[in-house]
Length: 432
Ligand code: PMP
Image (cartoon, rainbow, N blue to C red):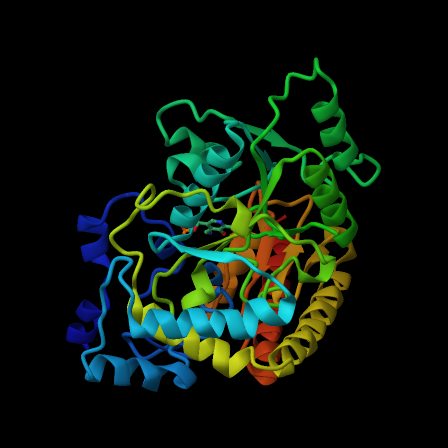
């Protein structure tokens, strides 16, 4: 008994890992195995995962559809590391990406493989936009999250993260996202006015960077109309549009790209997180061909060729994106998630809870009691459901289950949420 208790202790992390660690503080368990949407801790307890690696596990943990391809590749000594050398694994991925993603959508992007994290892709996108336009300013939006390296951080809203940079984050102007100032304030009109007025104080930007559904910012959804107007405005003024699809892409909002419903074509798209399909690092920048002004080796990185990621990414495209079956399944589960969350919100009129999202990326918003989501998340974790919070004040409970989740698991997780919210609500009422 003592031996087991010792083995699952997190004391080592407390003693030796930097204070910067975050998720482990909310979910203080020693995890060991993952399969689909189930996490198994070292003590044998099972957890249901509605956190989804913050968007990196859209196909669940260790999806069996890709596992064998990965094992076979390792078994036959397939190249693992290759910088940007040509490999068979990379070639097969590019072929699959063109066949299953680009061609059916009529897209003609060129592919830039960057270092393996989302921030690497964002840095490359910003750098390229500045090179192409020879302008330095970038417009980003309130609530945005684009990574914590210097360029992406300058375009990120979060005050604490910005403060950690230790130097002024320049060359980005943050403007209101759709709905930031209420429904009656038109934020595209505002942007247009600033661009048009020679005395507005806004330096004409190289690019506007945005997420269609702001993940960390609290599941703020840009409408189709707003996106279309933004595209029209940026195109008319020769400002590039960078679509950061690192979290909302790869099926999360119901289609491969989050912008598909709007019909817009961004100039540059960043992808990472679930692109590799197996939780392994990989990032990609999609560039309209006429904007590909890079000179050889102008932007590099040692880990641009994670071939293990190419193998599973290709397998995922073949398995899930060859036809519309997967998208239909996501739509079905999205309907269940939205309906159940609405029902849960409706059970507590006094809390004024709201529901927003798209696909399987949803938020339960607590507009008055901002600490409620964290308390519900904690209670849910004690019932072995993992889900995080988001938003400026942590006012959003964030639902990001694997897109491959079984309907029964989805309903089970939602019933844990219902019980957790009741317990937190009744506990608070009893404490008053
Ligand atoms: N952009 C978006 C929209 C993100 O959600 C994230 C990660 N949460 C990033 C960029 C940065 O990705 P990474 O953490 O892999 O650097």
